[in-house]
Image 1 (cartoon, rainbow, N blue to C red):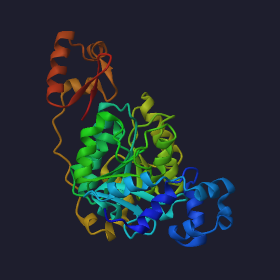
Image 2 (cartoon, helix red, strand yellow; image 1 turned 180 degrees about the vertical axis):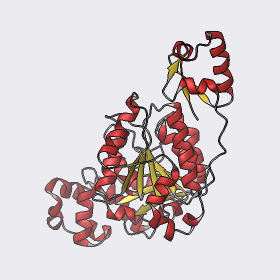
Image 3 (tube, one colour; image 1 turned 120 degrees about the vertical axis):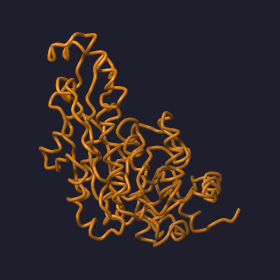
Length: 364
């Protein structure tokens, strides 16, 4: 195996237990390079604290871990991007806590393209999933790479929409980039590895822990010009991403929803706090007009909206909130048999979705 001594030093530094990103950046600021850090006397490395300096002195980053990472990086499509690399995302250099290195699988060039983060609930509604996918596809077709976290629900829908457009998608993981979490998204992760980019700051083999996911959220927002929240409860992790975006000086957008839905309350709270309300993809693209003027791909017009579909009388009685058969019967005056037959027809045509608990929701 052809060893890269510079990369080996970066890996040894970042794989040292007890040595966090802030300490590593402090050492690099003082000594200039990982090689100089590793060669410096322990007394000079005390600037990051005795415990971290002692860990470096003992060489707790095992040779096996470094060798494994170097071997992994030699596989086609794999890369380890350090702070010293030209491929390191410029926007991440602006955040308060940029990771010293990133593990990547897929199209590394996406790190240099304009991007929009799309996040939301893992337990999304059918309408929320549809919105996330359609908005993401429109943004991707307009030149914005979609960044999200590969979670179930809104994240998965956003990645799917991003893959359908030219600008594709980046999935920022809360695990090592060699681990797929959740397993239900394994097929989606494989598609992203082929046509998009999987990205993680965590060492290979790192399992998902509750601490990792809020930490990776700052990278989701940090990689993008703005962050769109599609659906979120008040206690949603998506609000952590939105808060990180605001702190990083990024634009924050939110799609409003039903006043009765718990998954709309987080979006409504963001709008009250100053997030921009979004009803169409153009609302976001117009706000990011500087990107549209300067980005070569962004000057392309967004895909046209589909032609309106004639309304159906039953859709009028359903409204846009989840509703059960009895409520539709009461509103419409129709029999349960007629309502069930019409609901089946509308579901087969993709205009409504069946929800748990015998409820239905209008999709368009």
